[in-house]
Length: 255
Image 1 (cartoon, rainbow, N blue to C red):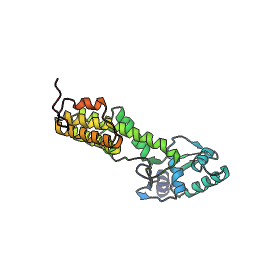
Image 2 (cartoon, rainbow, N blue to C red; image 1 turned 120 degrees about the horizontal axis):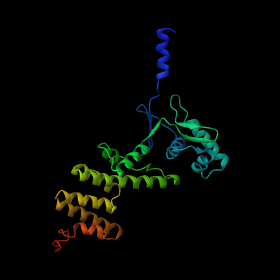
Image 3 (cartoon, rainbow, N blue to C red; image 1 turned 45 degrees about the horizontal axis):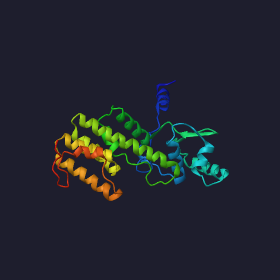
Image 4 (cartoon, helix red, strand yellow; image 1 turned 45 degrees about the vertical axis):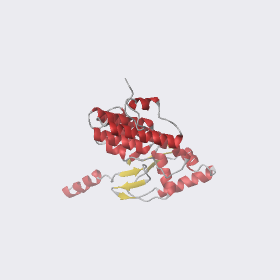
């Protein structure tokens, strides 16, 4: 074989398809090598459903779940149509057998990547880049209302909130108060009525010696909780500021 033929053969062997990125956080988005790929809703739903499961799924189960109100024959036909719409040259999105379907191995899913980040943070093995990743993540497909999404959306929401709170505490332990506050504020923004996130913020302000900020955060949460739910902060929260001159003008408690 000539040198030129060997070069061509080597080029064919080493060619790798551009990476495919599937975004499910904040909304559906599919990109290959930076270029957006537009799909009809039925194909989007199929791809998202497969992305939520890291194992092959039976075709009958996929069809029956995605087209719950259709007959089995109609659901199977809808599934075949969705799979046909996902066929694109140089862009393998689904691994399919006669009985099973799964997301293609080459597809990178932001949900899975963020879940790995959250689990790493909860194991106190966080990295500097984890703060940005968790802060910008957002909810899982927030504008979709499919029943099969509800549990997964809440599961990820809770995972992200716990990770943000844990990261804030770990950053504060290293005296990185600005970054810790950013993480805690992201948790509060994601769930304004979540007391544990507000407690983290109050503790951060007190650790920095910012008593006024701690009181302001406590008062903000107390007012919000009272207005929205007619409740008062728990004793755990109240104990954080019991010795401080809280917003009602009372003096610090003795002892």
